[in-house]
Amino acid sequence: MSKNTIDSKLLARMFMAGACNLEKNKDYINELNVFPVPDGDTGTNMTMTIMSAYKELNNLEDPDMKATCKAISSGSLRGARGNSGVILSQLIRGFTKIACEEKELDINIITDACKNSVATAYKAVMKPKEGTILTVASGVYDKAEELRKNGETDLTVFLETVIAYADEVLLKTPDLLPVLKQAGVVDSGGQGLMEFLHGALDLFEGKDVETNIASQKASAKVEKKESSDSIANELKYSYRTDFTILLNKPFNAKTEQDLKNFLEALGDSINIVPTDGNIKVHCHTNDPGLIIQRALKQGVLTDIKVENLKLEGKEETAEAKAEPVKEEIKPEIKEEAKEYGFIAVSVGDGMSEIFKSIGADYIIEGGQTMNPSTEDVLNAIDKVNAKHVFIFPNNKNIILAANQARDLTEDKEVIVIPTKTVPQGIAALINFLPDSSVDENTDNMTEGANNVKTGQVTYAVRDTEIDDKVIQKDDYMGIGDKGILSVGSDRDSVTKEMIAEMVDDDTCVITVYVGSDVEETDYEQLKSDLEELYEDVEVEIQIGGQPIYYYIVSVE
Image (cartoon, rainbow, N blue to C red; front, side):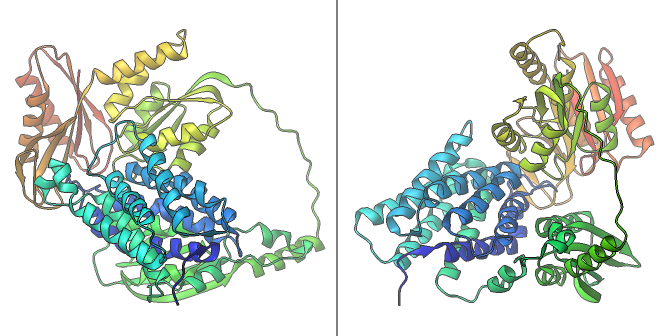
């Protein structure tokens, strides 16, 4: 018997199935990134965005459509990471704004919701590009509208046809973006959206999806407690989960970060400890089964221990009752907000210290290796006690998340200076003038950032061809503001060739920020070589301590 409407329960289960399918295919999506850099993270960003909404949805018991839509929208907006994650969250936001007003969704409502979804996402991007996730989302709406006008009444046929057409649109993205065609890939964000939609469709059609949705739902339920169970009620996650992974495959820094990201999406109190070639894992969660299932991808599990924290909370409450402790409550004295505050995204101890030394109030750890979420930026804004807060994203893939945090902030003015690199962020903050207005400083700092050329040296994670350069796996790459400037097997030669492309007659200073994997003898030799090559230019060395990027270079 066909279903011609989707109620709140079915929508929630479809969303969760889509989220799990996206997570399952995350690594494949990451590999579609055009630039073959070790931080290609579209799949990771989209997964963490969707899992934030998944987590909020898991915490609801028998929600109606409004509550379901609110959890999905709020969770994805606050958990959004990277451009792809922010655009996905805006697609969800636009869809749920229409859906939340209904008890059930039919073809007409779904089509209206898709229309608003696409409009909302396009509005969030300053310069929308075709051949991206936006194009694929537009394809979803275009086909939905066509079927509605043609009088389609069967929801199964409607959904299958819409998603099949969106798959066709995805395959055409290389024709719209030459850089995709040259790299021989489809758009990674569009692929992520299709993985999510296919997972949702599979559940709608009753197919055997990987995750036991009913089990996940049950694990998130919060039982009603008596007032004496207040400590247990305060716990967000019910189960302390511990186990050891007997590794059967390499466990490097990226693998560890991926596992940590997954655990953080489903819990807290995360601790991952390498020991004797194995990995000990500890976390608090509402779904130990899902976490154990994910860990099995790395090897055999042993010493598995799952304990109910809420039952322990009852015992603690009883003990507390036996010996009550009176504590003096002192009124909180809040300092008056200062006029200006500054938040910078940075990675590496040296980089962070540089930002602090020039006036940054708060450092968000992240950047190339891990894009912070909208929630991370909101938390930083909350910690800076200032009337006007300037944010330096220092990465083009973080600007949208910063903008989203700005739009969600109500109690202070937030200004995002759209810095795309750390050197741009440093130059921008140096150009702040305390006696100037917000608008004047915004212009000064933006201009300061735009006067800096940035180059970054890293390595390739796969063979590809981009910017008319043939790149082999493990080659070194010098990446400039607008593309790849140099490629080769010798790191110093690649670095010097990259800098040669950046230097011109007006260059006064070359600053090299040294990464965590570079030896002192290497960067001292580089400094000596650069001083010999550019006699009239000042060469500075700063210890940045950043991972993955051996050198980050600014030319001014």
